[in-house]
Length: 158
Length: 106
Image (tube, rainbow over all chains, first blue to last red; front, side, top):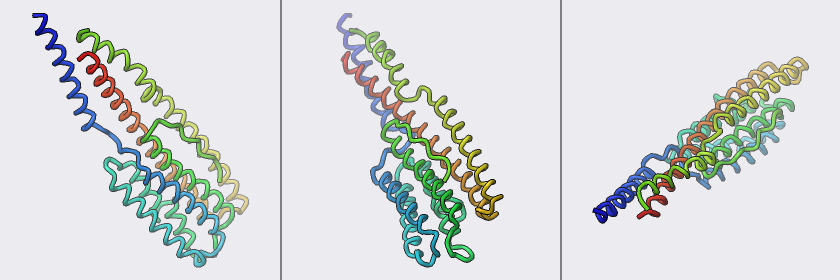
């Protein structure tokens, strides 16, 4: 009697272990951290900001750089799509890239717009700050996939 | 050692695990949203002044306002993603706790 009880609770414990290991594999909600995704976000943020700073000049002088940046943001989006359970970050990259929206994709389209002589100082400064914040949201999310981390509050203003 | 030991070990580990992962998330999210809202008001005040001063054209003002809305979407997406990550960490922590406690009594 004592012996059967001894083995019974061990068996129950073993079943719990098996179920827990199985649960760990099948019920993950979100994606895993990606060093490549983090690198994409930080690098493209720096490049975007550098190009915005140059947007006081006519678009034609920097069209190659703008095109390359757009292409690389598209590549970051595609990479994001390829990660499992990564819809949230993918939606962020899509919003960043979209020329019909008002983040970096829309800014590059605006720069290219009528006249295309360069973007005014106040607008450029404000947009720069907001686009930096947008990238910070992507970076913050990526970092938090790995560990709980408080992201620095984005600066207000341009 | 018996099954009760296993259950007690799991139960005693849960509060600390919750504290380190999902606790206070609602309060944090609320505070974060309020901060975001205040900064949005500041932006709109500054842009309206700039429009009145001729530093912004109407089109540029409209663009910035829409940019603010897109930024709000980015903010909300990050909050959603972080919530998912916290729940995952809590679940992973519970799994680890169960496994450790079970192995300890085997």
